[in-house]
Image (cartoon, rainbow, N blue to C red; front, side, top):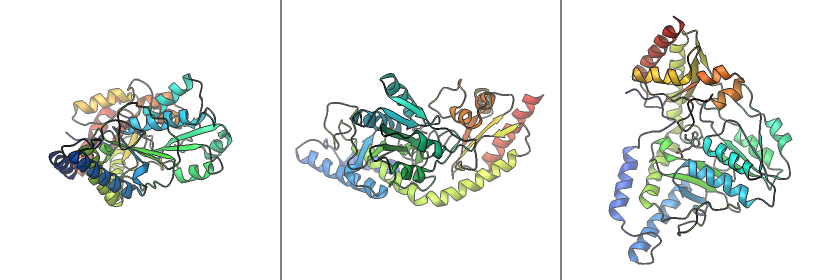
Length: 373
Ligand code: PMP
């Protein structure tokens, strides 16, 4: 079935599966156990952490392995907010964050934190001038996605980090879940950085949070020892090992894959250009891997259903938010509820074929004509 939902999930690469099986077959001990097999597992875990750290150009002590970006974002946002109460209870973010960030902000707000959402322009970029105005001495956290998940907007992370340089007590959390393997990501920016390997041909159930040295974080789980005090529980050795080949390939092939996806994105847009009722919501700042669009007169959920019936898998917004609500991203960009309700997300990969793109364009054309008549 033609798959256009690579931003929701990718299928694990064979090298990832091989590493998982290899590690599972050859290690028996719990990495926390003091006996020989435990020590052996601990040594393997240490080398896995070394490998991931060297790929991210951070130190192994800065790595917290989690179950996914949802957990990483929860740990970063709530963990920083709770550990930085002495700084203040003011947080800045955007209306375009993934629900694993925005839901944390809602619950922090209920417990007395003040949340400001920085304005977003129709091109999807945050207004960095407004960010400067919103920053206060009691701002404990700024949380932003390097690439937003519904329209694929690339935010100016480097500029945001430089604005925050004059606020040394304000922590910056960067969600790079939709960025890794798609655009170059510098792990030099941000106090905490999250991502999920299943977005780049790794395994679901693995996640990473980078916590830079000196950043205080309140652990969100209690009990049980691990390789880090910030996330307890027996280290998931084979799952952790599977991150290495996924990340290695994602970083090594990023530019090649980007060029391939860019060509496919342009080809799809060209095919769609003859359909007058299609409105593209992605902007010039979107990654080519995500094309957010809508057909006038049909809401996103119905469009998804009609495409599903024709054999095409796409998303309404991101896989983790309710399909009945308007897209928060499209709403923030265009301030148009109708447009936000019509929005769907098509996500492509270097694996997407021209034939699949032609088929999808034809299916969209047919639906657009049915809607008009
Ligand atoms: N952040 C962003 C930007 C995402 O797109 C996603 C996945 N939809 C997540 C966080 C959560 O990732 P996971 O579902 O792997 O926990």
